[in-house]
Length: 261
Image 1 (cartoon, one colour):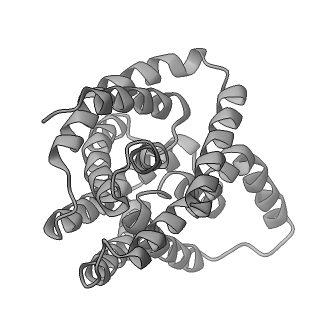
Image 2 (cartoon, helix red, strand yellow):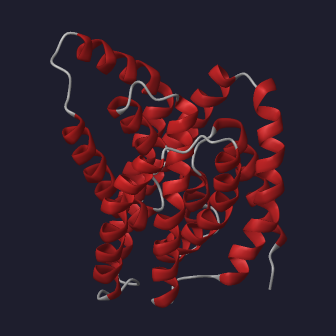
């Protein structure tokens, strides 16, 4: 049965995603685990399919606006898709209801939320510092940048499949460092497009091992799709310098609860 409370939560998360650009996994997965008591593996799997559906719409928009660097998408996917498949294979062979498995997913989710909160506040300073450092050092070769992009994809594939968090905050930050000449809209667009095959593979994998709650998924989508539209329209009118620190503090507090529970 559809749950209206999940739809309301989806609406609120969608609005925040539209305003801040923070990935839905950073908000939705901990909300499901902490507030609604959803099993971590089910929360991650359901959120991955949720992300694949919502980010497909984002792909259409970025494609129409020509803000996708397909070379970056390809390099990321070369690392992330195999990493996701390996992570899913390993998870399929363990008892996901066991205390050890629940603790692993919960701790990994908590630390990824800490990282997301940190990058929300300090991303601009980090990227600027690295750009300044690169001015005084030998340019990095294109081959090295390409290799680093594949490695980034590998890391994202593992982390996103395990926690559903990381593609937005970590991915965009590292891409801005690796490709300083690329406009941020192209970096964001490429990151969103890359997240579609990654989250789709992860979501289908969780479906195959029985960790998808379909009623929960539909309930979330009913609220989140209009929420993202509302948030996108509100974004230009919202004080980003205030919203981001508040969101970062909230994520840090949730992460603390997950790590210490």
